[in-house]
Amino acid sequence: MDKFQIETAQNVNIVQNVAGVGDRILAFLIDSAIMFIYILLVSFLFGFLDFFSDSFLLWMTIMLPLLLYHLLWEQFWNGQSPGKAVMKIRVVKIDGSKPAFSNYLIRWLLRIIDITILSGAVALVVILFNGRGQRLGDLAAATTVISEKKTISFAQTVLTDLPENYNPEYPQVTIFTDAEMQTIKNMFQQAKYNGNHNVILKLSNRVSKVMEVQYETTPLTFIDTVIKDYNYYTQQL
Figure 1 (cartoon, rainbow, N blue to C red):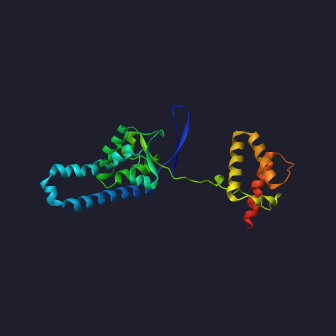
Figure 2: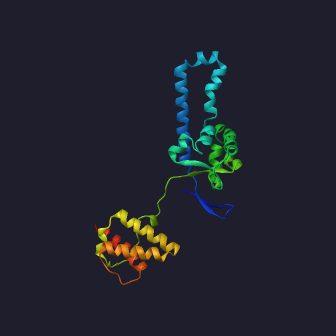
Figure 3: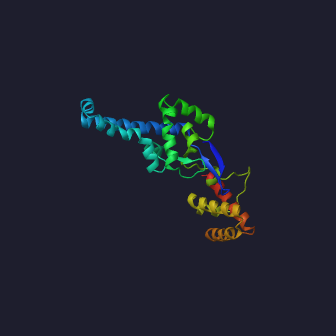
C-alpha cells in the first residue's frame, strides 16, 4: 500500500495510506452494480420504454439519481459511496481534512474525462503516475482517496526477534495469554518511546507480582526480557 506524508499548516505530519487501484476499481464496479440494479427495478416497476417515451420529464427525474450518484453519496456520506464503504476507502482533501461540497463537485464534473469517456483509462494512468492516488478530478479538487484498512506491522504484534541460542530467564511468563502479552508490549513500547519511566516501573512491578518473581535488573530490562521469554516459550509449543 503506497503512502505519502504531508505537513499541515499547524506543522503536524500526516501519513496517508493511498487507496490501491484495485480497491478503487472494485468500489467502482460495486457502485455500477447498484446503479444497474436501480435501472432494472425502475424498468420493472414502470414498464420500461412505453412508460418513458410518454413521460420525458419523469424519465429525467428517475434518471437524475444515477447522474448525481457519486456526488450525492460522497457529499452526504463523508466522502464515501456504497462501493467505497465496502472497500473501506474514502475521499479526503490532500491535507487529510474533510472536503467541501466544491471539492466533491469538481471531482464529479471531471468524471466525464477521467472515467466516462475512456472507461477509466485516463484515471488509471494519472493515478499510477501521480503517486498520491489522484486522478484528474482529484488534482483539480485538491483531494485524494485513502484506504482506511488497518495494517498491522511486526512491531504491533506480540512477536519479537530473538537472537540465536537465546536463554530465557523466566519460565513463569507462560502464565500470560497472547492478548495480555500484547498489552504489556504495547504499554512498554509506548512508555519507552515517550521516556515515561514511571509507567515502565509500575508495569514491571505489576508483571513481577503476577509472575511471582523478583528481578534484579532495571525495570526496562526486566520487561524486555519478559517479552522475549514469552516469545521463546510460545515458539516451542
